[in-house]
Image 1 (cartoon, rainbow, N blue to C red):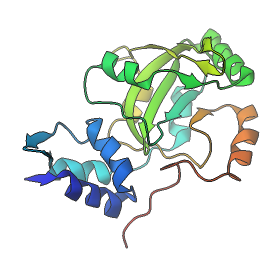
Image 2: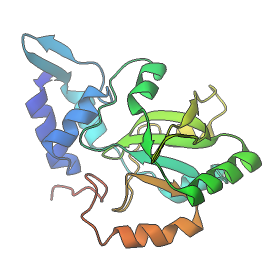
Image 3: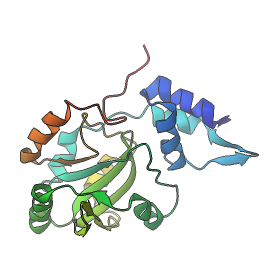
Length: 207
């Protein structure tokens, strides 16, 4: 059964605690499958929307067991939309990032030197919309870096399989996280004193 985008957003709000504007980004990224246009309205498969909204969380420790070098998580903000399309199109939509700072760049490069490309996940409200390998974070302008990304090789990414049909929930903080990086934890704690990043907290479930 096909339902409107408004009804799909209502399901996300009830099942996953995701607001209308945030759920729209999830839907446009194709997480709940392709849409069907009917006039000016986009329709979505009801069963697929409910399956996505009810996806369980993936524990960070599970990912770090198979990714000893850590994992870079980019939490897309309310103005960022990664469209449904090819891997290259989604990568280009991510674009440049605010400079993550010299310490994080150093930690990323150490992890790459020791373990190869670092797992990179871009999420919309915890739902993965882009999986890649991070090879570097070179500066491209004052205060900006551009992630050097490669497509995960089929059949070799255990971490990609762990994120299949799962939601990666992170605590409030800045729009990016370096999971598994102990020195970064202090910054994450300080970030909790600021207003939470949209969809960064745990979802609320309906009673």
